[in-house]
Length: 432
Image (cartoon, rainbow, N blue to C red; front, top):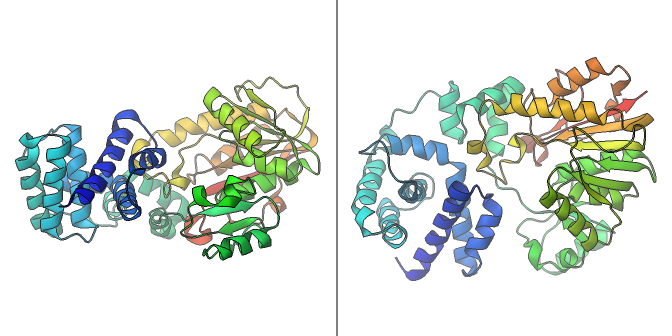
């Protein structure tokens, strides 16, 4: 293996180590690891890291059937994971996948483990197709086939029934770049076309442009603040919040970090106050608003004990902390970080946030609830329990046209398989 091939694999390995050791998110870890590589090696290293994280559970299950000892050091396990992905999914010849993994092990862990890595991956190459793969009718079997923990498969089947596999597989398709035009979207599209890109208008918002293959960091429109990077689902949420507040209305974004929705709503004319529980996230909101030239006051505040008077705003946007299963296509490690108890635990937090926010809008105002997930517990169940306790609120179904109506409660769900967006639940609740 040439030095550049080793360099790209070492970069992917270091991404995995940061994600597993430091709890880092994959995107900043990838950006930090690949910066000094050439364009081709950057693309290879990023894809290898993201895909290995995406298929981690399946790879671990398969490796478990060929490992000669039950416990191994985690640094060695990450070498094996990278090699296993190349063997199983990377269209890499077996001899090359094994040899490059041995070289990686020697460079990153030490010569003492090279024989072990060689033996395990050779055994996996021989036995992959003969492993006792469970029936895909089971949650374990479908999870291994699509790269998810069994409990996520069970949650998907509870929400989507026979369409669960479509949603899970859509979460394995890496998202392209979507830009939000802050001015004339047609002019921005022409500008992007002039530099060799092929933008297409978003299906859900007139300000959205999908730009496959774009590097946002290299675009003048992004550097100059004439466009921002935003998934179209997030664009729809911000537009719904601004519309709920009304022209020039007062909007509180109660869980605002990192600030994209708050700034978008401000661009649309809302008078936005942003808040977040975490100081570093509130700081990111302030930095983004300053970069975009927007007047968005920012506070560090606990949404379950908001320091604002009742009836003081026209609308509250509550983009609630959640399992994030709707964004696993851009954060593949999330599917392995979350546990089966997380939807219920986070639903308790979501209920507390909704209860605390409910008195903040004026009479006739609105509470906009969003969550970048699709579990029943965190979406219709949370909103249903809120409406049962607060008869002064009702779902304003006509306020959101995008996405799919749900059979078990109010609101709409944007789906990666149908809408090409992140998974996002959204409902506008109007106070009487």
